[in-house]
Amino acid sequence: ATPKSVCEGCQRVILDRFLLRLNDSLWHEQCVQCASCKEPLQTTCFYRDKKLYCKLDYEKLFAVKCAGCLEAIAPSELVMRAQKSVYHLHCFCCCVCERRLQKGDEFVLKEGQLLCKGDY
Image 1 (spheres, rainbow, N blue to C red):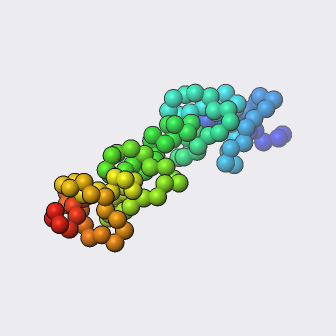
Image 2: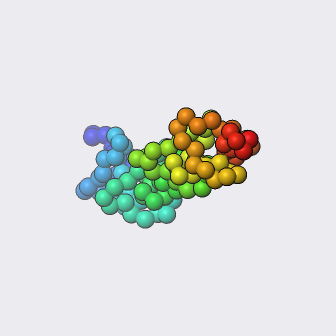
Image 3: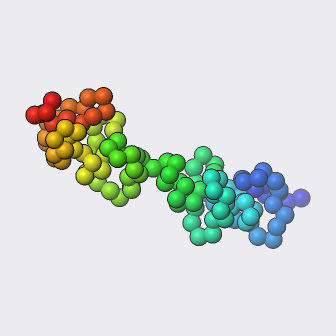
């Protein structure tokens, strides 16, 4: 007897003529859908914690968020870091004078607020 292929999405045996292989796991074609919005995934998918996501939902759920504007930061963007916080370059500003802080500038991060040395 040949071993049965089990779908990662629904945990049922795959008896269909076609199956999909994603990251060393097997799926029914109809089970390849976003875990969040349930839309079918036809060309690309994102895989995390054994779940599939469309690009939009994956970015909404797992993207690094800017501590300044709270929007997602694209993986290709340059960033500034202060302790555990990450900022878009244009969001890395003093909260008092709104001057953009550059690499090498002295600043203080107080209760989540960036302050340039002068305003501190």
